[in-house]
Length: 198
Image (tube, rainbow, N blue to C red; front, side):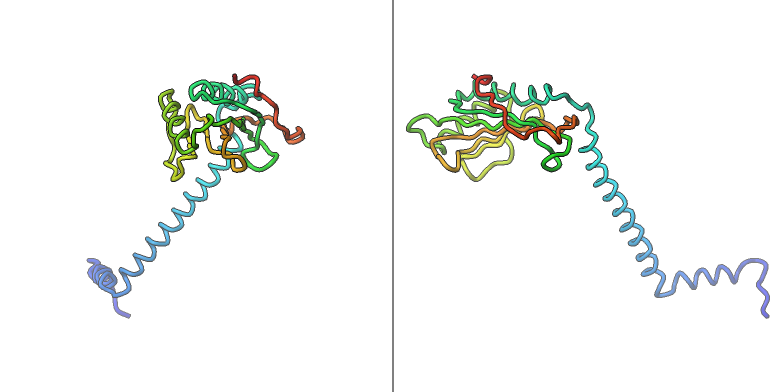
């Protein structure tokens, strides 16, 4: 059996030989790649779990009345700023997860008459301009001039023509998903709020 010199020369030679091996770089690359893949998967899974957790446990939950006020006040502002001729408006707490489970958000569905003789593609850009002047921010540009998406103070407003009657418009407002009260057994009906918006 050969003895190893005490100065460590053979060990240094073995390390140098291993570094020159044709398999060294691919093995290191594979080891780093596997580490990156597992690290990325761990971060992704944690982010997905965090998003679900944020939905299930929102910061600063709100009461039923706060959910309602969060969308009713902006609806009043939009009706006044745009001069909408409201024909009907309803309010409901909607589940942000599925049909029944908390958290919930306040939602409004409002119909309004377009001015007589005015085409929707001429009217909606004017409504958008009026709302932007009142602090609303226009969302992604729509290819259709009969559609507008705006946001303000975490409330989303969507304006569009009525699918069944082009002389009518629809305004939908959605608040934040912060109401964690249990409404699973409530009747899921719209509450008429038409009189509160004029």
